[in-house]
Picture 1 (tube, rainbow, N blue to C red):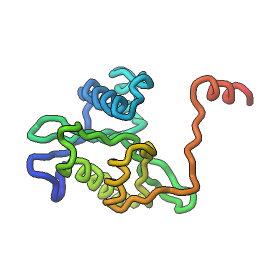
Picture 2 (picture 1 turned 90 degrees about the vertical axis):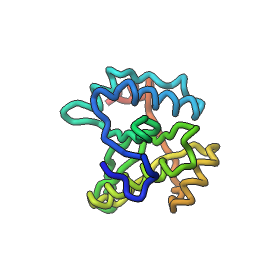
Picture 3 (picture 1 turned 120 degrees about the vertical axis):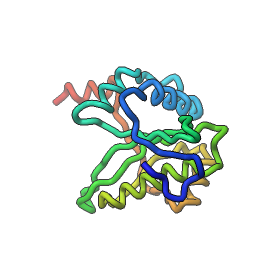
Length: 167
């Protein structure tokens, strides 16, 4: 997969089944950066089962600089009932700290945006931790806007099981 106007030596490719250990290492690095390392329970096996099965739950892009993996993005499709079209939700984007500020993250985002446009998606969205000011400023610089008035709601663990069993 070509990068359009990306940094010299940077290439983006679709992850392969053999990349599960690499993907997990990126997930763990991102989780540590977000101070959420204790929440990672994914394994290479669970990633293989969900990302490389007949109906994958998500897709992963790997960013390589001079043939070395330095970044990744994990995304999946969502749907807007208001527009009647799909969107892309970016679950994770991560660039190794020593490689930040060189255009690699922007190239990954531009690649996903191009994919969204080509596939007639009406949205490309993601969440960012409210304390992560460097990322927030970066997202503003590329034109992203916060979705004021909306808060994420989540059911997981026992609460998820409890609701599932009630009805």
